[in-house]
Length: 294
Length: 321
Image (cartoon, rainbow over all chains, first blue to last red; front, top):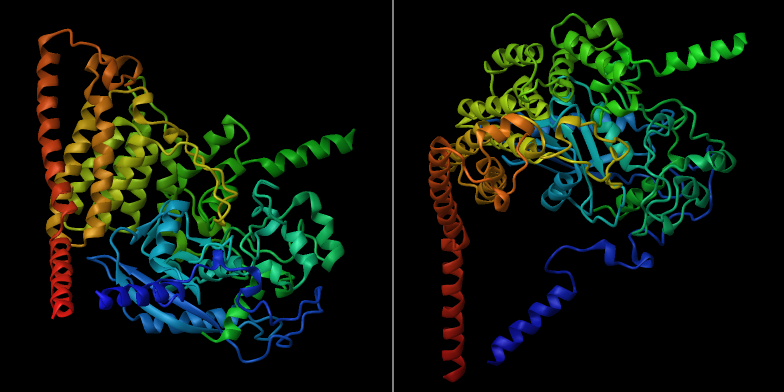
Protein backbone atom coordinates (compact mmCIF):
# COMPACT_ATOMS: atom_id res chain seq x y z
CA UNK A 1 0.00 0.00 0.00
CA UNK A 2 2.88 2.34 0.84
CA UNK A 3 4.35 1.76 -2.60
CA UNK A 4 1.07 2.75 -4.26
CA UNK A 5 0.74 5.92 -2.22
CA UNK A 6 4.37 6.78 -2.90
CA UNK A 7 3.81 6.31 -6.65
CA UNK A 8 0.79 8.60 -6.58
CA UNK A 9 2.74 11.30 -4.72
CA UNK A 10 5.63 11.13 -7.20
CA UNK A 11 3.21 11.33 -10.12
CA UNK A 12 1.48 14.38 -8.66
CA UNK A 13 4.74 16.19 -8.04
CA UNK A 14 5.79 15.52 -11.63
CA UNK A 15 2.54 17.00 -12.86
CA UNK A 16 3.07 20.14 -10.76
CA UNK A 17 6.60 20.58 -12.01
CA UNK A 18 5.54 20.19 -15.65
CA UNK A 19 7.68 17.13 -16.08
CA UNK A 20 4.55 15.48 -17.35
CA UNK A 21 2.42 17.34 -19.88
CA UNK A 22 3.12 20.55 -21.75
CA UNK A 23 3.54 23.98 -20.26
CA UNK A 24 0.54 26.26 -20.61
CA UNK A 25 1.88 29.79 -21.01
CA UNK A 26 -1.57 31.30 -20.65
CA UNK A 27 -1.53 30.47 -16.99
CA UNK A 28 1.90 31.96 -16.42
CA UNK A 29 2.17 35.30 -14.71
CA UNK A 30 3.53 38.01 -16.96
CA UNK A 31 6.59 38.43 -14.78
CA UNK A 32 7.48 34.81 -15.48
CA UNK A 33 7.14 35.06 -19.23
CA UNK A 34 10.19 34.02 -21.18
CA UNK A 35 12.58 36.86 -21.66
CA UNK A 36 10.55 39.42 -19.77
CA UNK A 37 13.57 40.22 -17.67
CA UNK A 38 15.94 40.65 -20.54
CA UNK A 39 15.47 43.18 -23.33
CA UNK A 40 15.76 46.90 -23.04
CA UNK A 41 12.37 48.23 -21.96
CA UNK A 42 12.94 51.72 -23.28
CA UNK A 43 10.51 52.95 -25.94
CA UNK A 44 12.00 53.07 -29.39
CA UNK A 45 11.20 54.54 -32.75
CA UNK A 46 12.22 53.84 -36.31
CA UNK A 47 15.94 54.16 -36.68
CA UNK A 48 16.39 53.89 -32.96
CA UNK A 49 16.37 50.15 -32.82
CA UNK A 50 19.77 48.79 -32.15
CA UNK A 51 20.50 46.38 -34.94
CA UNK A 52 21.95 43.33 -33.30
CA UNK A 53 22.44 45.36 -30.16
CA UNK A 54 20.57 45.10 -26.91
CA UNK A 55 19.35 41.57 -27.24
CA UNK A 56 22.73 40.13 -28.06
CA UNK A 57 24.25 38.70 -31.17
CA UNK A 58 24.34 35.23 -32.56
CA UNK A 59 21.00 34.05 -31.25
CA UNK A 60 18.80 32.31 -33.75
CA UNK A 61 15.04 32.02 -33.87
CA UNK A 62 14.09 28.34 -33.95
CA UNK A 63 11.87 27.01 -36.73
CA UNK A 64 9.92 23.78 -36.83
CA UNK A 65 8.78 22.56 -40.24
CA UNK A 66 6.11 19.88 -40.56
CA UNK A 67 5.21 18.18 -43.85
CA UNK A 68 1.75 16.59 -43.92
CA UNK A 69 1.76 13.60 -46.24
CA UNK A 70 -1.19 11.42 -47.09
CA UNK A 71 -1.28 7.69 -47.50
CA UNK A 72 -0.87 8.01 -51.26
CA UNK A 73 1.12 11.22 -51.58
CA UNK A 74 4.41 12.26 -50.12
CA UNK A 75 4.81 16.03 -50.31
CA UNK A 76 8.57 16.27 -50.29
CA UNK A 77 11.19 14.11 -51.94
CA UNK A 78 13.67 15.28 -49.35
CA UNK A 79 12.48 17.26 -46.36
CA UNK A 80 16.02 18.23 -45.37
CA UNK A 81 16.69 19.89 -48.71
CA UNK A 82 13.35 21.71 -48.51
CA UNK A 83 14.11 22.76 -44.96
CA UNK A 84 17.53 24.13 -45.86
CA UNK A 85 15.98 26.10 -48.72
CA UNK A 86 13.36 27.51 -46.36
CA UNK A 87 16.02 28.51 -43.88
CA UNK A 88 18.05 30.20 -46.58
CA UNK A 89 15.06 32.19 -47.88
CA UNK A 90 13.95 33.16 -44.40
CA UNK A 91 17.36 34.52 -43.49
CA UNK A 92 17.55 36.33 -46.80
CA UNK A 93 14.08 37.90 -46.72
CA UNK A 94 14.20 38.90 -43.10
CA UNK A 95 17.48 40.67 -43.43
CA UNK A 96 17.08 44.38 -42.92
CA UNK A 97 19.18 46.82 -44.89
CA UNK A 98 21.62 43.99 -45.52
CA UNK A 99 21.79 43.42 -41.80
CA UNK A 100 20.74 39.99 -40.57
CA UNK A 101 19.18 41.21 -37.39
CA UNK A 102 16.67 38.39 -37.53
CA UNK A 103 18.25 35.03 -38.12
CA UNK A 104 16.78 31.58 -37.92
CA UNK A 105 17.79 28.04 -37.27
CA UNK A 106 16.05 24.72 -37.81
CA UNK A 107 14.91 23.22 -34.59
CA UNK A 108 12.82 20.35 -35.88
CA UNK A 109 11.96 19.06 -39.34
CA UNK A 110 9.70 16.09 -39.83
CA UNK A 111 7.03 14.57 -42.05
CA UNK A 112 3.97 12.68 -40.99
CA UNK A 113 1.03 10.92 -42.62
CA UNK A 114 -2.09 12.86 -41.80
CA UNK A 115 -4.96 12.12 -44.14
CA UNK A 116 -7.40 14.42 -42.38
CA UNK A 117 -5.21 17.54 -42.75
CA UNK A 118 -3.27 16.71 -45.92
CA UNK A 119 -5.89 18.89 -47.61
CA UNK A 120 -6.74 21.49 -45.05
CA UNK A 121 -8.85 24.56 -44.34
CA UNK A 122 -7.80 28.03 -43.29
CA UNK A 123 -10.50 28.38 -40.65
CA UNK A 124 -10.32 28.64 -36.88
CA UNK A 125 -11.39 25.11 -35.92
CA UNK A 126 -8.89 23.60 -38.34
CA UNK A 127 -6.04 25.76 -37.09
CA UNK A 128 -7.03 24.99 -33.53
CA UNK A 129 -6.89 21.26 -34.23
CA UNK A 130 -3.60 21.57 -36.10
CA UNK A 131 -2.05 23.60 -33.31
CA UNK A 132 -3.00 20.89 -30.84
CA UNK A 133 -1.27 18.28 -32.99
CA UNK A 134 1.76 20.09 -34.27
CA UNK A 135 2.08 23.36 -32.36
CA UNK A 136 5.07 24.29 -30.30
CA UNK A 137 5.84 26.73 -27.53
CA UNK A 138 9.54 26.80 -28.21
CA UNK A 139 9.77 27.42 -31.93
CA UNK A 140 7.92 29.03 -34.80
CA UNK A 141 6.01 26.32 -36.61
CA UNK A 142 5.22 26.15 -40.31
CA UNK A 143 3.02 23.29 -41.48
CA UNK A 144 3.03 22.38 -45.16
CA UNK A 145 -0.19 20.91 -46.52
CA UNK A 146 -1.00 19.59 -49.97
CA UNK A 147 -3.93 21.90 -50.57
CA UNK A 148 -5.74 24.61 -48.66
CA UNK A 149 -9.44 25.11 -49.22
CA UNK A 150 -10.33 27.66 -51.87
CA UNK A 151 -7.85 30.34 -52.84
CA UNK A 152 -6.14 30.33 -49.48
CA UNK A 153 -2.38 29.88 -49.80
CA UNK A 154 -1.42 30.37 -46.19
CA UNK A 155 -2.71 31.33 -42.78
CA UNK A 156 -1.25 32.35 -39.46
CA UNK A 157 -2.59 31.40 -36.04
CA UNK A 158 -0.68 33.64 -33.74
CA UNK A 159 -2.72 36.62 -32.84
CA UNK A 160 -2.91 35.90 -29.18
CA UNK A 161 0.60 34.76 -28.63
CA UNK A 162 1.32 33.37 -26.19
CA UNK A 163 -2.22 32.80 -24.98
CA UNK A 164 -2.55 30.02 -27.49
CA UNK A 165 0.37 28.01 -26.37
CA UNK A 166 0.63 26.17 -29.64
CA UNK A 167 1.05 28.83 -32.27
CA UNK A 168 1.33 27.75 -35.87
CA UNK A 169 1.39 28.89 -39.46
CA UNK A 170 0.13 26.88 -42.41
CA UNK A 171 0.91 27.05 -46.13
CA UNK A 172 0.44 25.08 -49.31
CA UNK A 173 3.52 23.03 -50.14
CA UNK A 174 3.36 23.77 -53.87
CA UNK A 175 4.06 27.48 -53.70
CA UNK A 176 7.57 27.35 -52.25
CA UNK A 177 8.72 23.97 -53.48
CA UNK A 178 7.03 23.58 -56.86
CA UNK A 179 6.49 27.18 -58.00
CA UNK A 180 9.55 28.44 -56.14
CA UNK A 181 7.49 31.21 -54.59
CA UNK A 182 8.13 31.57 -50.88
CA UNK A 183 5.72 34.45 -50.46
CA UNK A 184 3.19 32.56 -48.33
CA UNK A 185 5.94 31.31 -46.01
CA UNK A 186 7.58 34.66 -45.44
CA UNK A 187 4.21 36.38 -45.36
CA UNK A 188 2.82 34.13 -42.64
CA UNK A 189 5.94 34.27 -40.50
CA UNK A 190 5.97 38.05 -40.90
CA UNK A 191 2.43 38.10 -39.53
CA UNK A 192 3.84 36.20 -36.59
CA UNK A 193 6.20 39.11 -36.09
CA UNK A 194 3.28 41.47 -35.97
CA UNK A 195 3.21 42.80 -39.52
CA UNK A 196 -0.23 43.70 -40.92
CA UNK A 197 -1.39 43.96 -44.51
CA UNK A 198 -1.12 47.00 -46.67
CA UNK A 199 -3.77 49.66 -46.18
CA UNK A 200 -4.86 48.28 -42.85
CA UNK A 201 -6.75 45.48 -44.51
CA UNK A 202 -5.52 43.33 -41.69
CA UNK A 203 -7.47 45.27 -39.11
CA UNK A 204 -10.31 43.44 -37.47
CA UNK A 205 -13.22 45.07 -35.71
CA UNK A 206 -11.89 47.76 -33.45
CA UNK A 207 -12.29 47.47 -29.77
CA UNK A 208 -14.26 44.26 -29.95
CA UNK A 209 -11.77 42.39 -27.89
CA UNK A 210 -10.89 44.85 -25.21
CA UNK A 211 -7.23 44.70 -26.10
CA UNK A 212 -4.68 47.31 -27.01
CA UNK A 213 -4.34 48.43 -30.56
CA UNK A 214 -1.05 47.97 -32.32
CA UNK A 215 -0.72 51.72 -32.20
CA UNK A 216 -0.49 51.44 -28.45
CA UNK A 217 2.02 48.70 -28.67
CA UNK A 218 4.26 50.84 -30.80
CA UNK A 219 4.06 53.60 -28.27
CA UNK A 220 4.79 51.22 -25.47
CA UNK A 221 8.06 50.20 -26.99
CA UNK A 222 9.68 47.10 -25.67
CA UNK A 223 7.82 45.92 -22.69
CA UNK A 224 7.02 42.61 -21.07
CA UNK A 225 3.43 43.77 -21.26
CA UNK A 226 3.46 42.94 -24.92
CA UNK A 227 3.98 39.28 -24.20
CA UNK A 228 1.07 38.98 -21.86
CA UNK A 229 -1.76 36.65 -22.57
CA UNK A 230 -4.21 39.37 -23.55
CA UNK A 231 -2.13 40.37 -26.49
CA UNK A 232 -4.86 40.33 -29.08
CA UNK A 233 -4.17 43.37 -31.17
CA UNK A 234 -5.47 45.15 -34.19
CA UNK A 235 -4.72 48.27 -36.13
CA UNK A 236 -7.02 50.96 -34.86
CA UNK A 237 -7.86 53.06 -37.87
CA UNK A 238 -9.18 55.86 -35.72
CA UNK A 239 -5.78 56.21 -34.16
CA UNK A 240 -3.76 56.19 -37.33
CA UNK A 241 -2.00 59.37 -36.41
CA UNK A 242 -0.85 57.93 -33.10
CA UNK A 243 1.67 55.72 -34.75
CA UNK A 244 2.87 58.62 -36.82
CA UNK A 245 3.51 60.52 -33.66
CA UNK A 246 5.13 57.57 -32.04
CA UNK A 247 7.48 56.47 -34.72
CA UNK A 248 7.04 58.43 -37.90
CA UNK A 249 4.98 55.65 -39.39
CA UNK A 250 1.62 56.00 -40.98
CA UNK A 251 -0.46 52.86 -40.87
CA UNK A 252 -2.69 54.12 -43.61
CA UNK A 253 0.20 54.36 -45.99
CA UNK A 254 2.07 51.57 -47.68
CA UNK A 255 4.80 51.74 -45.09
CA UNK A 256 5.64 48.83 -42.90
CA UNK A 257 3.10 46.39 -44.24
CA UNK A 258 2.65 43.43 -46.55
CA UNK A 259 0.66 43.14 -49.74
CA UNK A 260 -2.25 40.75 -49.27
CA UNK A 261 -1.97 39.54 -52.87
CA UNK A 262 0.89 37.84 -54.61
CA UNK A 263 1.98 36.50 -57.94
CA UNK A 264 2.38 39.83 -59.69
CA UNK A 265 4.67 41.83 -57.41
CA UNK A 266 8.21 42.54 -58.41
CA UNK A 267 9.42 42.24 -54.83
CA UNK A 268 7.94 38.78 -54.47
CA UNK A 269 4.75 40.10 -52.99
CA UNK A 270 5.58 40.67 -49.41
CA UNK A 271 7.34 43.46 -47.60
CA UNK A 272 6.43 46.85 -48.90
CA UNK A 273 8.81 49.72 -48.59
CA UNK A 274 9.73 50.89 -45.15
CA UNK A 275 9.62 47.62 -43.29
CA UNK A 276 11.28 47.94 -39.94
CA UNK A 277 11.35 45.46 -37.14
CA UNK A 278 11.02 48.27 -34.64
CA UNK A 279 7.27 48.15 -35.11
CA UNK A 280 6.99 44.46 -34.49
CA UNK A 281 6.14 43.77 -30.91
CA UNK A 282 5.72 40.06 -31.40
CA UNK A 283 9.25 39.97 -32.66
CA UNK A 284 10.41 40.82 -29.18
CA UNK A 285 8.61 37.82 -27.76
CA UNK A 286 10.11 35.48 -30.31
CA UNK A 287 13.51 37.04 -30.01
CA UNK A 288 13.44 36.35 -26.33
CA UNK A 289 12.68 32.75 -27.15
CA UNK A 290 15.68 32.74 -29.43
CA UNK A 291 17.83 34.13 -26.66
CA UNK A 292 16.90 31.20 -24.52
CA UNK A 293 18.47 29.12 -27.26
CA UNK A 294 16.02 26.29 -27.16
CA UNK B 1 -18.27 71.28 -61.07
CA UNK B 2 -15.50 69.70 -63.08
CA UNK B 3 -13.82 68.71 -59.87
CA UNK B 4 -16.97 67.02 -58.59
CA UNK B 5 -17.45 65.12 -61.84
CA UNK B 6 -13.80 64.13 -61.80
CA UNK B 7 -14.11 62.93 -58.20
CA UNK B 8 -17.16 60.85 -59.06
CA UNK B 9 -15.40 59.34 -62.03
CA UNK B 10 -12.33 58.59 -59.97
CA UNK B 11 -14.30 57.04 -57.15
CA UNK B 12 -16.28 54.84 -59.53
CA UNK B 13 -13.01 53.84 -61.15
CA UNK B 14 -11.58 52.88 -57.77
CA UNK B 15 -14.42 50.54 -56.93
CA UNK B 16 -15.03 49.09 -60.39
CA UNK B 17 -14.58 45.35 -60.68
CA UNK B 18 -12.11 44.67 -63.41
CA UNK B 19 -10.04 41.70 -64.50
CA UNK B 20 -7.09 42.72 -62.40
CA UNK B 21 -9.14 43.00 -59.21
CA UNK B 22 -10.66 39.55 -59.81
CA UNK B 23 -7.22 38.05 -60.44
CA UNK B 24 -5.92 39.72 -57.29
CA UNK B 25 -8.70 38.14 -55.26
CA UNK B 26 -7.90 34.74 -56.72
CA UNK B 27 -4.33 35.23 -55.51
CA UNK B 28 -5.23 36.73 -52.16
CA UNK B 29 -2.94 34.86 -49.81
CA UNK B 30 -5.69 34.27 -47.28
CA UNK B 31 -8.46 33.42 -49.74
CA UNK B 32 -10.73 35.45 -52.00
CA UNK B 33 -12.43 38.42 -50.40
CA UNK B 34 -15.30 39.08 -52.81
CA UNK B 35 -17.16 41.32 -50.42
CA UNK B 36 -14.24 43.74 -50.64
CA UNK B 37 -14.95 44.44 -54.30
CA UNK B 38 -18.67 43.77 -54.69
CA UNK B 39 -20.66 46.97 -54.61
CA UNK B 40 -23.66 45.94 -56.68
CA UNK B 41 -25.29 43.07 -58.52
CA UNK B 42 -23.57 44.12 -61.70
CA UNK B 43 -20.25 43.57 -59.90
CA UNK B 44 -21.31 40.01 -59.14
CA UNK B 45 -22.13 39.47 -62.79
CA UNK B 46 -18.79 40.95 -63.80
CA UNK B 47 -16.89 38.70 -61.39
CA UNK B 48 -18.76 35.65 -62.66
CA UNK B 49 -18.08 36.52 -66.26
CA UNK B 50 -14.38 37.12 -65.54
CA UNK B 51 -14.09 33.83 -63.66
CA UNK B 52 -15.68 32.07 -66.60
CA UNK B 53 -13.21 33.69 -69.00
CA UNK B 54 -10.29 32.70 -66.80
CA UNK B 55 -11.54 29.11 -66.62
CA UNK B 56 -12.07 28.99 -70.39
CA UNK B 57 -8.64 30.59 -70.95
CA UNK B 58 -10.08 33.62 -72.70
CA UNK B 59 -8.15 35.70 -70.19
CA UNK B 60 -4.43 35.16 -69.84
CA UNK B 61 -3.25 36.13 -66.34
CA UNK B 62 0.26 36.78 -67.66
CA UNK B 63 -1.18 39.81 -69.48
CA UNK B 64 -1.77 41.20 -66.01
CA UNK B 65 1.76 40.55 -64.74
CA UNK B 66 1.05 37.20 -63.11
CA UNK B 67 3.71 34.57 -63.42
CA UNK B 68 3.19 31.91 -66.07
CA UNK B 69 3.81 29.02 -63.71
CA UNK B 70 1.04 30.24 -61.39
CA UNK B 71 -1.60 30.23 -64.16
CA UNK B 72 -2.83 26.66 -63.53
CA UNK B 73 -3.25 27.57 -59.88
CA UNK B 74 -5.16 30.73 -60.77
CA UNK B 75 -7.48 28.73 -63.03
CA UNK B 76 -8.03 26.13 -60.32
CA UNK B 77 -8.87 28.89 -57.83
CA UNK B 78 -11.33 30.35 -60.36
CA UNK B 79 -13.09 26.99 -60.64
CA UNK B 80 -13.56 26.78 -56.89
CA UNK B 81 -14.80 30.34 -56.59
CA UNK B 82 -17.14 30.06 -59.59
CA UNK B 83 -19.41 27.89 -57.48
CA UNK B 84 -20.36 30.89 -55.36
CA UNK B 85 -21.78 32.65 -58.40
CA UNK B 86 -23.89 29.93 -60.03
CA UNK B 87 -27.52 30.62 -60.82
CA UNK B 88 -30.28 28.12 -60.26
CA UNK B 89 -33.42 27.20 -62.13
CA UNK B 90 -36.86 26.68 -60.64
CA UNK B 91 -36.08 23.11 -59.61
CA UNK B 92 -32.99 24.26 -57.75
CA UNK B 93 -30.47 22.93 -60.24
CA UNK B 94 -27.70 24.88 -61.89
CA UNK B 95 -28.55 26.67 -65.10
CA UNK B 96 -27.42 24.93 -68.24
CA UNK B 97 -24.51 27.28 -68.86
CA UNK B 98 -23.18 26.89 -65.32
CA UNK B 99 -23.68 23.15 -65.48
CA UNK B 100 -21.73 23.01 -68.74
CA UNK B 101 -18.78 24.79 -67.18
CA UNK B 102 -18.63 22.24 -64.37
CA UNK B 103 -19.07 19.36 -66.82
CA UNK B 104 -16.16 20.62 -68.87
CA UNK B 105 -13.94 21.06 -65.80
CA UNK B 106 -15.11 17.71 -64.45
CA UNK B 107 -13.79 15.93 -67.53
CA UNK B 108 -10.37 17.45 -66.98
CA UNK B 109 -10.46 16.91 -63.23
CA UNK B 110 -11.35 13.24 -63.56
CA UNK B 111 -8.06 12.60 -65.34
CA UNK B 112 -6.36 13.24 -62.02
CA UNK B 113 -9.04 12.92 -59.35
CA UNK B 114 -6.64 13.71 -56.51
CA UNK B 115 -4.91 16.61 -58.24
CA UNK B 116 -5.11 20.32 -57.58
CA UNK B 117 -7.71 21.04 -60.26
CA UNK B 118 -9.89 18.19 -59.01
CA UNK B 119 -9.76 19.49 -55.43
CA UNK B 120 -10.88 22.92 -56.66
CA UNK B 121 -13.58 21.26 -58.74
CA UNK B 122 -14.98 19.50 -55.64
CA UNK B 123 -14.82 22.79 -53.76
CA UNK B 124 -16.67 24.54 -56.60
CA UNK B 125 -19.40 21.87 -56.54
CA UNK B 126 -19.71 22.36 -52.79
CA UNK B 127 -20.06 26.12 -53.20
CA UNK B 128 -22.68 25.71 -55.93
CA UNK B 129 -24.76 23.77 -53.39
CA UNK B 130 -27.42 22.45 -55.72
CA UNK B 131 -28.94 18.96 -55.85
CA UNK B 132 -27.11 18.18 -59.08
CA UNK B 133 -23.76 19.42 -57.76
CA UNK B 134 -24.32 17.23 -54.70
CA UNK B 135 -24.93 14.18 -56.89
CA UNK B 136 -21.80 14.90 -58.92
CA UNK B 137 -19.81 15.35 -55.73
CA UNK B 138 -21.08 12.02 -54.41
CA UNK B 139 -20.16 10.32 -57.70
CA UNK B 140 -16.64 11.69 -57.40
CA UNK B 141 -16.12 9.41 -54.41
CA UNK B 142 -16.00 6.50 -56.87
CA UNK B 143 -12.80 7.90 -58.34
CA UNK B 144 -11.04 8.27 -55.00
CA UNK B 145 -12.07 5.06 -53.26
CA UNK B 146 -8.45 4.15 -52.49
CA UNK B 147 -7.29 7.63 -51.53
CA UNK B 148 -8.18 8.48 -47.92
CA UNK B 149 -7.28 12.17 -47.92
CA UNK B 150 -9.15 13.08 -51.12
CA UNK B 151 -12.16 10.99 -50.12
CA UNK B 152 -12.16 12.76 -46.79
CA UNK B 153 -11.99 16.12 -48.57
CA UNK B 154 -15.00 15.24 -50.70
CA UNK B 155 -16.86 13.96 -47.65
CA UNK B 156 -16.17 17.27 -45.95
CA UNK B 157 -17.43 19.10 -49.05
CA UNK B 158 -20.65 17.08 -48.93
CA UNK B 159 -21.09 17.89 -45.25
CA UNK B 160 -20.62 21.61 -45.82
CA UNK B 161 -22.94 21.59 -48.83
CA UNK B 162 -25.73 19.95 -46.82
CA UNK B 163 -25.27 21.81 -43.59
CA UNK B 164 -24.29 25.20 -45.03
CA UNK B 165 -21.45 27.13 -43.52
CA UNK B 166 -23.69 29.95 -42.37
CA UNK B 167 -22.20 33.21 -41.26
CA UNK B 168 -19.27 31.98 -39.30
CA UNK B 169 -18.01 34.41 -36.68
CA UNK B 170 -14.69 36.05 -37.47
CA UNK B 171 -11.89 34.67 -35.40
CA UNK B 172 -9.46 37.42 -34.37
CA UNK B 173 -6.74 34.88 -33.80
CA UNK B 174 -6.50 34.29 -37.54
CA UNK B 175 -4.75 36.61 -39.93
CA UNK B 176 -7.65 36.17 -42.36
CA UNK B 177 -10.20 37.41 -39.85
CA UNK B 178 -10.77 40.56 -41.86
CA UNK B 179 -12.26 38.53 -44.70
CA UNK B 180 -16.01 38.27 -44.43
CA UNK B 181 -16.86 35.08 -46.27
CA UNK B 182 -18.86 35.44 -49.45
CA UNK B 183 -20.80 32.18 -49.60
CA UNK B 184 -24.31 32.98 -50.79
CA UNK B 185 -25.18 29.41 -51.76
CA UNK B 186 -24.01 28.08 -48.39
CA UNK B 187 -25.77 30.60 -46.23
CA UNK B 188 -28.29 27.99 -45.09
CA UNK B 189 -28.74 24.24 -44.89
CA UNK B 190 -29.98 22.42 -47.97
CA UNK B 191 -33.44 21.84 -46.53
CA UNK B 192 -34.05 25.56 -46.45
CA UNK B 193 -33.27 25.94 -50.11
CA UNK B 194 -35.58 25.27 -52.99
CA UNK B 195 -34.95 22.24 -55.13
CA UNK B 196 -35.56 18.54 -55.48
CA UNK B 197 -33.13 17.44 -52.84
CA UNK B 198 -34.52 14.11 -51.72
CA UNK B 199 -32.90 11.77 -54.21
CA UNK B 200 -29.51 13.46 -54.25
CA UNK B 201 -29.32 13.66 -50.46
CA UNK B 202 -30.16 9.97 -50.01
CA UNK B 203 -27.77 9.12 -52.80
CA UNK B 204 -24.89 11.12 -51.30
CA UNK B 205 -25.43 9.48 -47.89
CA UNK B 206 -25.34 6.07 -49.54
CA UNK B 207 -22.16 6.89 -51.46
CA UNK B 208 -20.54 8.28 -48.36
CA UNK B 209 -21.28 5.11 -46.46
CA UNK B 210 -19.70 3.06 -49.25
CA UNK B 211 -16.71 5.36 -49.26
CA UNK B 212 -16.24 4.99 -45.51
CA UNK B 213 -16.30 1.21 -45.84
CA UNK B 214 -13.66 1.41 -48.58
CA UNK B 215 -11.45 3.77 -46.61
CA UNK B 216 -11.61 1.48 -43.58
CA UNK B 217 -9.87 -1.12 -45.73
CA UNK B 218 -7.23 1.35 -46.84
CA UNK B 219 -6.42 3.24 -43.66
CA UNK B 220 -6.04 1.90 -40.16
CA UNK B 221 -5.48 5.32 -38.59
CA UNK B 222 -8.12 5.34 -35.85
CA UNK B 223 -8.25 9.10 -35.34
CA UNK B 224 -8.62 9.64 -39.07
CA UNK B 225 -11.37 7.03 -39.32
CA UNK B 226 -13.16 8.66 -36.42
CA UNK B 227 -12.99 12.05 -38.15
CA UNK B 228 -14.33 10.44 -41.32
CA UNK B 229 -17.09 8.73 -39.43
CA UNK B 230 -18.05 12.00 -37.72
CA UNK B 231 -18.65 13.59 -41.10
CA UNK B 232 -20.61 10.54 -42.21
CA UNK B 233 -22.71 10.74 -39.08
CA UNK B 234 -23.43 14.40 -39.71
CA UNK B 235 -24.60 13.63 -43.23
CA UNK B 236 -26.74 10.77 -41.92
CA UNK B 237 -28.28 13.14 -39.40
CA UNK B 238 -28.98 15.76 -42.05
CA UNK B 239 -30.48 13.14 -44.34
CA UNK B 240 -33.57 12.85 -42.22
CA UNK B 241 -34.87 16.19 -43.46
CA UNK B 242 -34.90 14.81 -46.99
CA UNK B 243 -36.31 11.45 -45.94
CA UNK B 244 -39.34 12.98 -44.39
CA UNK B 245 -40.47 14.88 -47.40
CA UNK B 246 -42.18 13.74 -50.50
CA UNK B 247 -41.09 14.38 -54.04
CA UNK B 248 -43.95 16.83 -54.36
CA UNK B 249 -42.76 18.80 -51.35
CA UNK B 250 -39.38 19.15 -52.92
CA UNK B 251 -40.73 20.29 -56.24
CA UNK B 252 -42.61 23.12 -54.65
CA UNK B 253 -40.77 25.16 -52.10
CA UNK B 254 -37.88 23.04 -51.06
CA UNK B 255 -37.33 20.67 -48.21
CA UNK B 256 -38.39 22.40 -45.04
CA UNK B 257 -40.13 19.63 -43.14
CA UNK B 258 -38.86 18.47 -39.79
CA UNK B 259 -39.03 14.90 -38.62
CA UNK B 260 -41.88 15.44 -36.23
CA UNK B 261 -43.84 17.54 -38.71
CA UNK B 262 -43.85 15.08 -41.58
CA UNK B 263 -46.89 15.22 -43.78
CA UNK B 264 -48.51 11.78 -44.10
CA UNK B 265 -47.95 10.23 -47.52
CA UNK B 266 -50.85 10.64 -49.87
CA UNK B 267 -50.35 7.74 -52.25
CA UNK B 268 -49.00 4.21 -52.39
CA UNK B 269 -45.85 5.21 -54.22
CA UNK B 270 -44.87 7.50 -51.41
CA UNK B 271 -45.69 4.86 -48.82
CA UNK B 272 -43.41 2.49 -50.66
CA UNK B 273 -40.66 5.08 -50.87
CA UNK B 274 -40.92 5.75 -47.17
CA UNK B 275 -40.80 2.09 -46.30
CA UNK B 276 -37.64 1.65 -48.34
CA UNK B 277 -36.12 4.76 -46.83
CA UNK B 278 -37.03 3.59 -43.34
CA UNK B 279 -35.46 0.21 -43.95
CA UNK B 280 -32.27 1.82 -45.22
CA UNK B 281 -32.22 4.05 -42.18
CA UNK B 282 -32.57 1.10 -39.81
CA UNK B 283 -29.87 -0.74 -41.67
CA UNK B 284 -27.55 2.28 -41.56
CA UNK B 285 -28.26 2.86 -37.90
CA UNK B 286 -27.35 -0.72 -37.09
CA UNK B 287 -24.15 -0.35 -39.02
CA UNK B 288 -23.17 2.90 -37.33
CA UNK B 289 -23.99 1.44 -33.97
CA UNK B 290 -21.81 -1.54 -34.56
CA UNK B 291 -18.92 0.67 -35.66
CA UNK B 292 -19.30 2.87 -32.62
CA UNK B 293 -19.51 -0.12 -30.37
CA UNK B 294 -16.31 -1.43 -31.83
CA UNK B 295 -14.60 1.93 -31.58
CA UNK B 296 -15.81 2.58 -28.06
CA UNK B 297 -14.07 -0.47 -26.69
CA UNK B 298 -10.83 -0.96 -28.54
CA UNK B 299 -8.61 -3.89 -27.69
CA UNK B 300 -6.00 -1.58 -26.20
CA UNK B 301 -8.56 -0.43 -23.62
CA UNK B 302 -9.08 -3.95 -22.31
CA UNK B 303 -5.37 -4.58 -22.48
CA UNK B 304 -4.50 -1.64 -20.24
CA UNK B 305 -7.32 -2.40 -17.84
CA UNK B 306 -5.94 -5.91 -17.55
CA UNK B 307 -2.40 -4.67 -16.99
CA UNK B 308 -3.63 -2.25 -14.34
CA UNK B 309 -5.39 -4.92 -12.30
CA UNK B 310 -2.41 -7.23 -12.70
CA UNK B 311 -0.11 -4.55 -11.27
CA UNK B 312 -2.49 -3.88 -8.40
CA UNK B 313 -2.59 -7.60 -7.67
CA UNK B 314 1.25 -7.92 -7.68
CA UNK B 315 1.68 -4.86 -5.48
CA UNK B 316 -0.96 -6.17 -3.10
CA UNK B 317 0.81 -9.51 -2.88
CA UNK B 318 4.14 -7.82 -2.20
CA UNK B 319 2.72 -5.63 0.54
CA UNK B 320 1.01 -8.59 2.17
CA UNK B 321 4.22 -10.66 2.11
